[in-house]
Image (cartoon, rainbow, N blue to C red; front, side, top):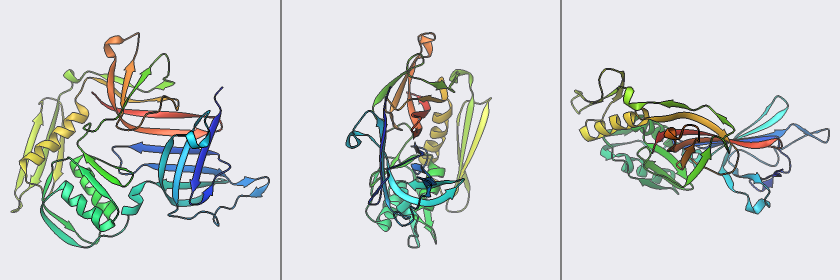
Length: 318
């Protein structure tokens, strides 16, 4: 029987009691988040935390099995976003380094700017962050007007479909599936608790992606890629006329949808530990032809005195 253990610090305060904690991490979402739930009362007295923690306090969350607290893996680092009382419990919602980008940046207009240079400009406005970008995407013009660093990241994320996420004080911007971590093996008969995976045949799925941009004169330019006769997707990118950028955006859309293999999610335990960007090798002795390795897009990890689990959502087959 595994012993559950946790070590959670908020500012200078270390939690000694806990109902549950849920950590959501993804290369497709801008922010990793955590929700810490505390009991509303302890020893028949209302639990008061307002005088010990506050919004903006740094947060470090560790939990796992059979380990001293200093040996527990770090599952989340970030900042307190909100503190609320809900149904007799205290919920502390936390956000990773994106929290720092929720402030306004100075108005300016950047012309013929790459996504990397644009986000490096935003990071310099925020201060204290580096940018690691290998995504080749250009804007003819990008106007920054009464907006926040978060809003700019969100716009670039939606328009490029790049993987944009933080690792510590570095903002990462990469094409989908370009950055990979370690490999973890999951066997349907051994360490998969619940499966919501479905197998699809990419050869039978016809997809067409059309990406429309506009040039300096307001004229529409577009690129269409894929196989006619099936589902069609249209993406509009105002202010983008570079044909290479439009083609890469179409490729990203097709890359995410047109492949043979599993799609969906499955639930496992806390070990083996896996992170977004890692490779999950799926094995099934009953259907060996479906075995394969998949890019981990996101994880939803829950922990309480009753146990721990990790829901893993996969992307395309690698």
